[in-house]
Length: 208
Length: 64
Image (cartoon, rainbow over all chains, first blue to last red; front, side, top):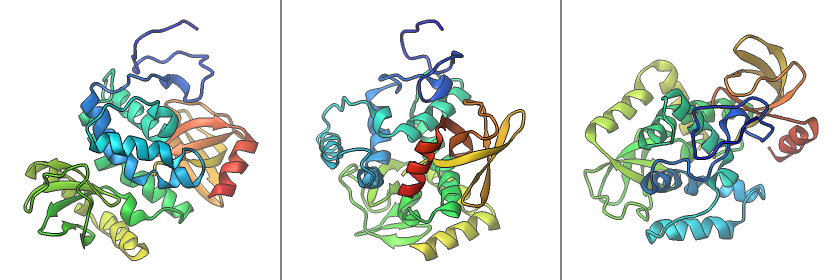
């Protein structure tokens, strides 16, 4: 085994004993602070499950959430807290032939791959609130956001300038980011492209 | 939350495995980790994420 420096996640090394196989571990795996903060806006709202399991303290999550809202720098080992999500992003970055996780990698995962993982888990365990867990496209209304699962209120803490008519992405109780009309259409097509997908959405809607 | 599923490997193909958990069978790519039959693994999003020991698998299953 040879020593490596830097954060190349595209090259694996056999015999690597550390958890996570060939992906390696690196604190600087995002291409920018903005990308890391985007990841956190998706990840923080649903960390209640990790808190419940004792994987992370609620005070740690609260500190990160406060820093995110205040636009302060977040300097913690995210792979230790969000192990599976980060590992998945590393896999996708590697498939996209990128050395670091960028915005495109995050979108690919949370917009188009996350759903499959939720659905698979939901077949085996009914332990996650699927409706809140899936990432959805939405249109901001006066008091609510309209998504393929209906209309409800979402917190604007991460996107305070979300205005009626804006296209956004929501996850758990939060508006995560503003997106373009084309991005909104692409995600909507993903959720409505065939009968199988519509059926899963319908099932999730009834599960709450 | 992005939580992996613990499962026991029952078949190994060239690029994927078939694993079993709670009577359900799931397929996953071995692009990252290459387990053997009988190993306990963590599966997420169609990938084997890690090989774990039986004790860890049982501990996670108890939390579900």
